[in-house]
Length: 545
Image (cartoon, rainbow, N blue to C red; front, side, top):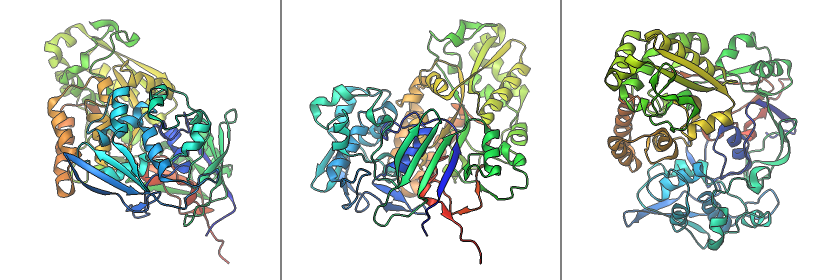
């Protein structure tokens, strides 16, 4: 049953953009996935359903790859009242290929058969040649079969209006204008929106750090609250107080909030043990940019680190052995942790049985002495760990790692560099810091999302971190076309190999919570995306008579 009430949501991290073809981090994806829709959606039982498509896509062999045909649904209207057409769908998928590195890299994996490090004119042109329209159908020509295509389309086929974009100075869809708009940074869609999603943008008050949305009616769509107010509140204590005082309807609370929430009263605390997320994750740069200020002298010694220090697997293997995983679960995760094999979250690989990790300082010291033929241990080193200072779980993780590292040798010095999320992301993607503690959530709900973005040496982030591994490349290639019963063994092999090579490490995963006022029920995530609420899912409880 619909409701005319409004919902106030306390989240954290201001959105960087509302452009659906640039939004690549959770802060932006939260509003974007409620403003825009893709060709496919998910049912409450996580089954695929046509959304802006009239039917599920059909893939047939075409050369060495697939030809994918997607019929486009009629009768859908954008928030400005104009009707969506197949031309808008073609334009939107094409625009995603030229707008920003992150989403374009994912699309390249689908269309070209491999992700790309940086978006350039040649790759953009190659992708655009594989996107076409035939009548009321979108046609995609894939260079090679891509098993997780439907999962990808749920998240990364968000549709905008071609004419609306062109009227605001954006790319008009003509081939000759592509290079002028290629990865150009700021766009008109950064703070304006015109989608087909369940909510339309009313106002973005940047000073107040609030976005206001109004419900948008589409035929057959769920009717949620009449309005949504999405607020950025960085202080977790303030978010907790707002929730308990009734000043907000939903608050993003972390595990360390549970004890302080007390008796809850009018608050629902719902656990999400199967949520696909890894937070925090240690990104290990095997080749730091030589001009990085975090390298000190640039050589092993009390004030420096070689740029390629973590190219030695022994130094990488040292890291998780220094970390007190049990203490982290006890003190940070409220006693509940989910073991997993980084960089895969536990629910992504049901066929694996991860072994709980334990701190072993003797083994860690052995790995340190083995690195670089003993040179690292003889000379010592200075390791900088960059982290997101306002995120408790990430900051505590950095502290626990620093503590273990300094215990295994007096010749290791550790510095924790706390910064904001934009700066942390910049350091990560530029490969400028040896260790970065940051959060990570799946780009779409399939194990290949983690393989493509975090393990494929050709992708943006592994390239920035200095991955060079032919064995891993072969495993990644085998995974992209694996379907049915073939999927589990190939992804299990990738997980074990990544674990052996210590390409990433993480403490046990945290069980996430949804905390909201008891006046509501039915609250769920949008397409299972971590920290992205489906605004339309809020249903007001009917008081008992």
